[in-house]
Image (cartoon, rainbow, N blue to C red; front, side, top):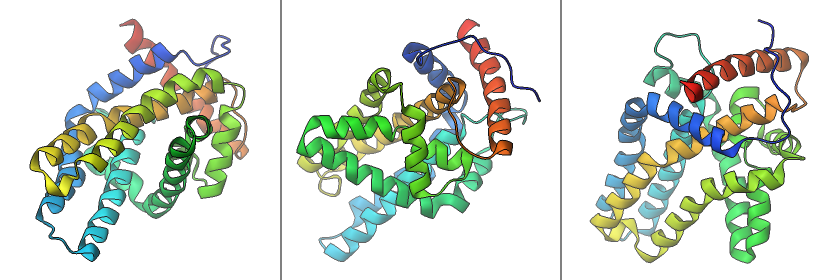
Amino acid sequence: MEPKERPEADEIDVRAALGVSFEIYRCYFWKLMLLALILVVSVEVMYLQQNDSDVLGLVVEIIAFVTLTWFWAASVMTVKPTAKTGGYSLSDLIAAVWPKLFWLVMLTAVTDVGIFFGFGLLIAPGLFLSVIWLVVVPVMLFEGLGVFQSLSRSIKLTEGHRLNLVWIAIIIWGPQLAEAGLGFLFPANESTLAALGFTAAESLLYPFLAILTGVTYYGLIALGGEGGSGAEVDQLEADVGTFDDRASHRLEG
């Protein structure tokens, strides 16, 4: 499939990216909610069931981090164009992430620690890291790169567009920082109401934010992102053409 010629653009249209993200989110809403029930709600139940054991608490925290990473990555996968009627099935989304889950967890650990530390130290370093690492998960999922290669690739893709991407980074990281702060004040294992609130936020909001990173990735590719093997670039260009057709139809229809 030949890549579709696209009009010249200098920056990602943030409003259009949000619109496309919402439409993809709407199309996959019930599948993502079922996935949340499997991966997110079950962990919150474990939070409420745990006692004061530090070891058990640590185990639950690790499980929660892994399942949330899985949920986030599966949500990103919904952005990748597919010829399947009805889009990806729930099993497709789970299976697509599973082989890469360990490395996705490692990648997410690196970026989360760096970004949260950056925001905690001074706001500017955290914001900068959140921008240059904005598309690390889509890069790993769609291009099959390793942890450090994904970090480098994201830095390369965002180069020249970072000022505009600040708004998307704020949209994505603002709720996560707010949740982290509230989680410190109201631990989920000490309050059923807090656990329900965090579960609802993660189940409803995180998929949209994850999808937004995938849409941003495709936008950066469309703006002329470089890198990868020839075969990979050809396939990515074909995917971008398909994605542009779908996005245009959704935004105009």
